[in-house]
Length: 302
Length: 272
Image (cartoon, each protein chain N blue to C red):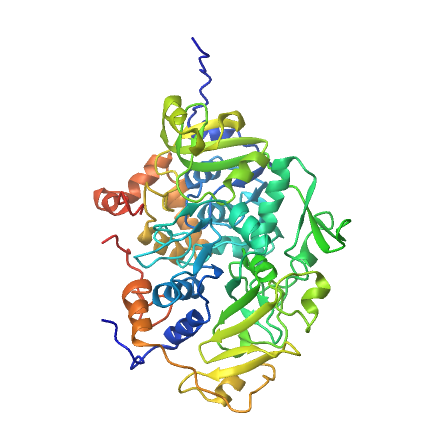
C-alpha cells in the first residue's frame, strides 16, 4: 500500500558538475569559513567552466577558488572573507584588476533579492542601502529609489534574483533530495527557492524513512532538487557543524600562499587541477592525526 | 572571589574592547560582527550585562562560547545558541524590522559624521585597496537604533570625508539620515585605541569624550584629518578592570588575536 517513490537523484560529483554549462548563473550556499561548497567548486574548476555568473551573499573559500581559477565573469555579493584567517584575496584582487564585474549590495540586499526571486516577485522594497555609495555603482536596471504609495516613506526597490543553479552542501539528504541542515542556514532557504534548479552535496545519504521521522528538519524539499551527490567532507577545509571543524593549518597555508597570484596557482595545481578526484585531494590533507582534530565533539559541535 | 580594581598593565586593544563593552546596556539587542565587536559584546555579557542579547547575522543567538573563536562563522562562536535560523529572520525580521538596539561595526575609514568605508580606497573607479567589503555593515548602520564603531586611530583612517560611503552615519549633517529616508538615530560612540569619541548633539560632528591613559591630545589630533570638537575638560578613560582583563585573557581572546595583549599565533583552538 502507498506510493513507492523511486526517483533517486543520486549522481557522482563529476556528473553533477557537468550539469552546469559555461555562462550559467550559480548561487553558492556557503558562507566565509562555514559549510562552503568546496568539493563542488573543485570539480567545476577541473571541468574548466568559464564565464560563470556567481552569487554568494558573503563570499567564502568556495568563491575565492572559483574566481581565482578564472571561471567567473560576474559576481553578485556583499563582500566576503575567511573570517580572522584572512581575506578572500583572489576575489578582491580580481576586483582591483577589473577582471570581474561585481554587482555589490549589502548582506540584506542579496538576501532580499533571493527572497523576491523565491516568491516569484519582480522586485522587493528595502530600507538599507539608502544614502550609501553602494547604490551609485549598481547597474541602472538593478534598483530604483521611490516613495511608498501608502505611507510616503522612501524605499529602494531592488530586482529579484533567480539563479540557474543553487548549490548547497548539507549534512544529510535522502536520495530524492530531501535535505537537512544542522546549524544556522543563512541564505540557503531563499537561495534554493529562488534558483531554477538545485544541486545538493551531502555528508550522508539517509533513507526517506529518516526524513519522515522529523520532516520539520527538512531545509530543502526534494521537489526542488535536481541532483544529489554523496560527498563526505564536501565542505573541507571549511567547517560543517557537528561533522567537522575548520582545518586551521590549511587555512593558514591558503592565506599565506594566496598572497600572490603565483602562489594561488601553485595551490590550485596541488589541490584541484593536479588531482583526479576530490578524494585524492582529501587524502593529501587528512591523515589520522588530522582526522582526530577535525572530528567534532558530540556536545560542542566542533 | 572576583578581584576588584584596575588592571596593572594592559594593551590598548584590551582597553578599547573593555570600554566598548561598557557601552552595552542590559537587556538590549546587539548585532555584532567578526572581530573586536564580537569580543566586546561577549565580554559585556560575561562581565556585567547578563541579559544582553547578542544577535549574529549568520543566524544564531543566545550563544555562550567557551573557546576563543576565529569569527562568527567558527562553530565555537555559536556554542549553546538557543536558535539557529536564517539571514531573513535575523537580519530581515529583527534588524530590518527595527528591533536591533545597537549595531556594532568596524571598518577602514570613519569620517567626521560617523560614515564608514568598508569597500574601497581611494575610489570605486580607480581602486587601490579593497578589503573584505561591507557584508552586513550597511544594513546594520542603516537599520539599528544606534551604532557603536571600533576603529584603530590612524590618520589615514580618520579622513574628513570617507572615500566611499559604505555605511551611513549622519551622512552630512543633523538631518542627513532623515533626508535619505533612514530610520534609526545613527552612530553614538567611536572607540579607538587612543580615545573615546562621540557626536555633537547639534552638528552631529565627531567630538572627543575622553583620552585613554597615557595618550596626549596632540597624538589624537595628529591622527585625525579633521577638527574634533573638544570638551572644556578632557577626562581620562577608565582603564580595564582586573575582571575585564581576566575574561579577555583567559576566556574570550586567549591567543591575543583580537586585543593584542600578547603576540598572537593561531594554533588549532581546542575543544578541551
